[in-house]
Amino acid sequence: MDDEARVVDADADAIERSKEAALRPETLEEFVGQRVVREQLGLVLSAAVGRGTPPDHVLLSGPPGLGKTTLAMIIAAELGTTLRVTSGPAIQHAGDLAAILSSLDEGDVLFLDEIHRLARPAEEMLYLAMEDFRVDVVVGKGPGATSIPLSLPPFTVVGATTRAGLLPAPLRDRFGFTGHLDFYEDDELRAIVVRSASKLGLSIAHDAAHEIASRSRGTPRIANRLLRRVRDWAEVHGSGRGDMEAAQAALDVYEVDERGLDRLDRAVLKALCLRFAGGPVGLSTLAVTVGEETETVETVAEPFLVREGLMSRTPRGRIATADAWHHLGLAPPAEAVAGDSGGRLFG
Image (tube, rainbow, N blue to C red; front, side, top):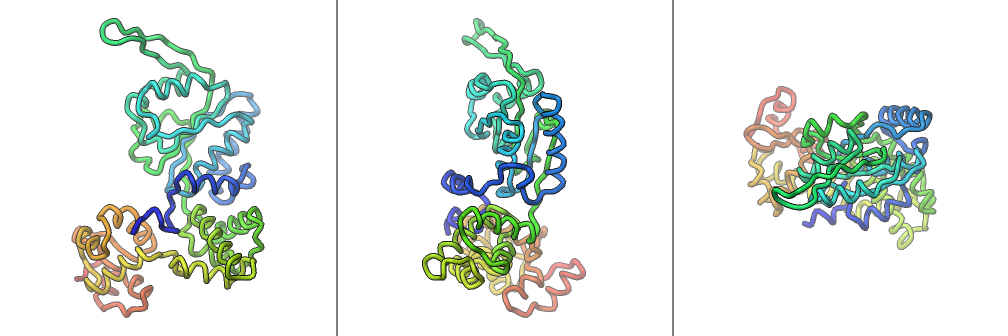
């Protein structure tokens, strides 16, 4: 199965991001969820605007699809300045970063997505740029090379990362504000679905919005994607409204069940429970059983299953919890119940 085709995949390509653009909130007031980060960031921005100076550099961390790019856009909008967008993988050499930095105007916001993937030479140049607002451009090669200091206007870096632990301490310490985005509650996602439906021109029922939210794995990007699929079903097969019938039918077509699991997730759980009696079983064996690459099972399916309490990772291998058996409509063995309550492994 191609993981890029999963409707519950929290990552997005360029086409997906372009579709999201029309649904993004434009101000902190419109941004739903992440109350603590929103309030803290609002204070930082308001103080900076009051002083007439760029705010501290901002680091946003958390799983994909929770709003890091949206917040970067909101920061630039709230400051009334220009947003420059790039990413760690796009900057392979220090010269690439120097070209971007030298084109910034005073007060601009530079958004660095996937900042943990920044090349080391560019990373070291960024240290100096963030702290002293200058870069040293090397002209020539070998013994005759000359370093020319280039002053930069004050600007703000907004870094986004899904893996904050990979950021080196010197880079992390240069951010004056760090915000971690958590998964959303169903009520927050329902509000996002209602807001997005309005922007899409789709009339949506309260129960249908809740149904979409409850299957969205705590992620606004997935909620908006499912909403678009519900709109498609409603326009092709339904009444054109986002009612409960359209929501349930569309989600059934895309094999997203009531807890947000899709075909791959259920295949992993069924293999654990039916083929291996609940485990423990090694990752590579499990991947072969479901016909997927080991990396796909480990990085695509497992994180959500573990977070939902349907699977556990142990030194002996992966095991299914009693909740996994119940979700599949199966009676868990006594060992599974004992393993959940007493922390013991079962095989």
